[in-house]
Length: 203
Image (cartoon, rainbow, N blue to C red; front, side):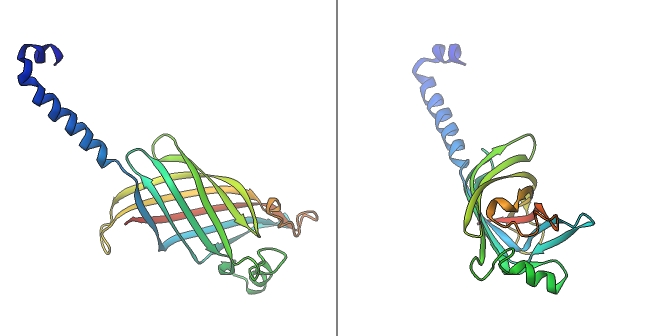
């Protein structure tokens, strides 16, 4: 194209300018957008060992979150999720009451569990590593989640908004946040597997 432009001389300059403008305009389209996690499609599950016999499965029923993400560059600008500690549910009323007290979540003093994203490393396909800080029981520690972007498309019904479908998981040691009840005696496991399934709507 360069040699062809030399033959055209000054007549080629407008063509080059238009091409450069077009490339610049294309770059503008790639920009971070705000996403809000749909509370109706936000599941937070946990799994923890009990006395070596079997694992207890549970959920947190109330949470909200939002993030700023560029789908073209796969760059995460920011992200925050707040989980209501009191909403813990393991299908056993007495156990849930115990988990809410000072031996575990201490919900009266620490009603919110907060995750703040600090960075994202995209991998192959829709996979990636999400880095952040988890604040629990008044202490903040780094965590990394394995993330999978399952789908990005306009929703087929209802709100019809552009929606991201995301799965994420990680395993933490609760004693790192000072929650060590039952660990030493082997009553309750230290490791807690966490799993997140969510749909996020582009604002």
